[in-house]
Amino acid sequence: SHKVAAQLKTLMFTDFAVPALCHRLSSGSAEMRSHACRLLGEMAFRHPDTCRAITSHVHHELVMSKLLRMMDSDERCDAGLVLNNCAAFCEQSCKRMVECPGLVEKFKAMATCNTSLALTAHQQLAASIAIGVFNCLSRSPALAQVLVEARVVEEALAP
Image 1 (cartoon, rainbow, N blue to C red):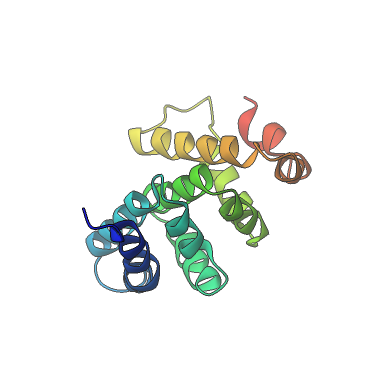
Image 2: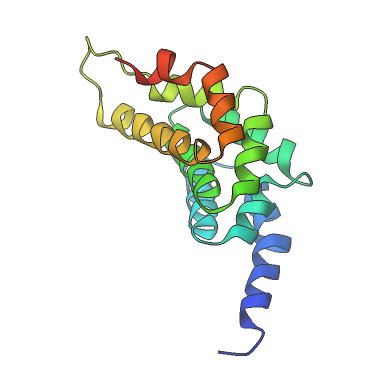
């Protein structure tokens, strides 16, 4: 591998691929949006620079608003996994996520399980993703306090 391959990969991801894929989150078919989310999630996995690019102030409102809209649809798991990976591998992304209006509430809705009803596999996956995001966010004492104030345990996690 070339001695600057990692730097070139970071540049390619953060400066070119992330903006292009973010554009795809609101255009094309549901299949196209799903593939764009899945690729963003894969790019974010163990790659903090990509996580920062996805949640950066340059792209923040654009990406977060698109992902939030997707979380109201059958695409919630794809969108949630992107944010889960950003939260898991980049503390700066966690901070930006909790600053995004409505994001904690969307994850609370995904995590809430009505125990009187049988959940579909999709609902179980959505709940699992949301719980994973809360786990990542709770690692920081300041962000854990945000979750306490949002009553995540009482309203989304407690049966």
